[in-house]
Structures are given as C-alpha cells and as structure tokens.
Image 1 (cartoon, rainbow, N blue to C red):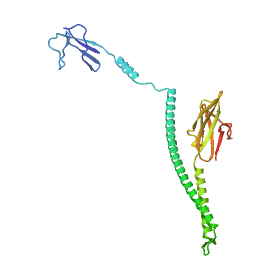
Image 2: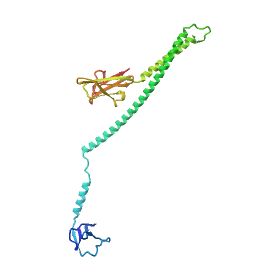
Image 3: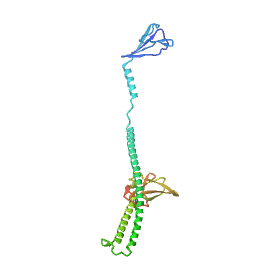
Image 4: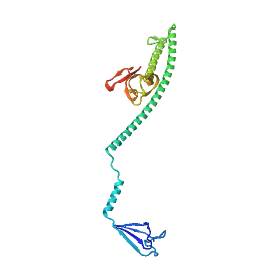
Amino acid sequence: MECNTISNAVQPCLPRICTKRTEKFQVNMVALTGNKLNWGLNGKSDNQFGRWRVFCTPVSLEEEFSALQSNNSEAREPPPSSEELKALTADAARSKLIKKLSEANQQNRFLKRQLQVKEDDLVNFKTKLAAVEYEIKALVNLAKEIAHYKIPVGSRRINGKYIQSHLLSRLVAVQKKLEDQIKDVDDAQSHEVPLFWHGVAESVQVMGSFDGWSQGEHLSPEYTTGPYATFSTTLMLRPGRYEIKFLVNGEWQLSTQLPIVGEGSMQNNVLIVE
C-alpha cells in the first residue's frame, strides 16, 4: 500500500522529499509553502499548515517480486557460449605459446652473444699460437744449422744422440704439437658459409639444425632476372653436417642445388661445412 500525506493548505504539484518504507506500505510526506519547503527535524510539520489528508495506494507483493526479479535479471550477465569459450581457450593457449616463444628467443639471443664471445676468444688465442709457431720455426731452423756443424770433441750425448741433434728433435716435436693445436682452433672456429636461393619469391628464410630450428636467417634479394630473383645470406657455422630447409613466402621448399635427405614431409637439404 502506498500512502501520500498532503497538506490542505497547498494543492499544487507537490515534490516528494522523503520516502519511508514500513512493511507493506510506502509513505510519502511533503510540505510546501510557496517555493519554500518546511519540515521539522522531529518529523512533524510546522503549525502554519492546516489539516492533512492521507492518500493510500495498495502495492501488491507480486509487483514487488517481479520488480526485484527484473532488477536481478538486468544485473546478471548471460553465460558465455561454446564459441566464446573456445575463443577464450584459444587466446589463453596462444598467449602461453607466445610467452614460451619469447623466452626461447631471449635464450637464443643470449647463447648467440655467448658464442660470439667464445669466437672472439678463439681468434685471440689463434693469434697468440701463430706468434709462438713463428718463433718455434725460427728455433728449428737454427737447430738444423747447428746440427750440421762439426760436433766438438767431448760433446754430451742424450739417449745416444749428441745434444745438438737432441735439441733439433725436441723442437720439431714442439712444432708438430703446436700445428695440431692450431688445427683444433680452426675446427672450433666458425666459418663464413654463403647460401643462395633462386626462384620466384618475395621473402625467403632458411631454417635448420644450426640453431635448433628456432629462428633461422632471412635471405636478402641480390638481383632479378625477369620474374626470378636471387636471395643470399652468409651463415657463421663450425665444421660439421647440418640439415636446412627454406621457408619461401611462408611455405616450406627445398633447394635443388643442395643434397636432399629424408622422405616425404621430412625431407631436408644437407649443408656440409669443412
């Protein structure tokens, strides 16, 4: 039930200034004096107003319940559909894959920086070995010259050889060991390996076991002959056997200029670095 208390003294359009709900009743109380609103703090009107009339309008429980249901239905969001759930799942999987790929790329860049540091160390070490090898060769030549001189009477022998011949044999052994070390450094050092692709293409990328099939290298166009173009790049590889494959315009392709191993979709080109 809805109750409105209206003063007899004022009959024009009355604004609602206070609403109080008591059980099943809704009571609206207003008081106007011209444009001035007067209402006592104790909930009683001033004495200047005359009699009061109370108008009551019933409010059914069904209306109240339906109003609450409509408010709840507006606030509640509908459950996502199966397509939306699939899209959310795909987005989550894509985000995880992108995160793992980013971590792998960061690790790959870190390993490349570490490899470059090792390469620089090998170059410095090889330079020092070359200087030592030059000195050893000079000493070997001197020892050979001394060994051809007439051996003085009373010269000492070591293992049945005069010390002149013994010195020569020791220097030759050191020279041989130094040459082997230089060869090992050459084997551990990366070499420039040129790589080419010739055909109709807009973008060419080579992937392979040289970096674990992770990033690969992009080839740059050099010159064109009609619709055909030649793409090239230079890989820094250590001596060994590598399997590679070209990604041409987003599709896997093999080069006819390199050996091919495998069968079906597992076919790859073979690159041998000596």
